[in-house]
Length: 193
Image (cartoon, rainbow, N blue to C red; front, side, top):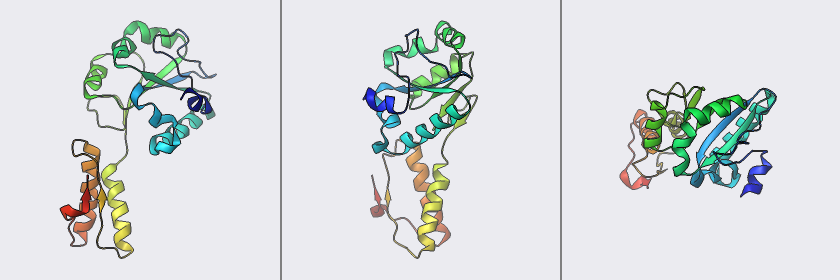
């Protein structure tokens, strides 16, 4: 809901709006998220990304920037990347763009867009992007499994998501690595998808 977003002092506007960003004293950073995934950013009951976002917002404010959550519909995508739209945003104080939950097709558009503002791909590998920030899924799962093994646990299960998502496979690889180091295996019946 918009009320929940307001609780984080986030300007939520349409991508085509002239009042797209309300810059902080030092400028603005826009976080672009598909509308159908925006709840993951501002609703702490959905977990990880809401906490990450609130930390990002706090840090931006500490350095005098505003961080603006910008949900978009698929039909708005091309307009977001146009040189006219980006130029207008830059004139309004935009310093950078963050992209989260973009599709593979949108990622390819980002690489070809020639954006004139710094941009960052969040939470995924995107070869060719100027900067990528993502979690080390394999290492995190490895450390979690290693901790359980150090506590004496030998039968470890994994709640894994669909194999089509690379990060789930990275997590499984990390757990398998920790088990292998102890001479153990991860039986298929211990993996829930």
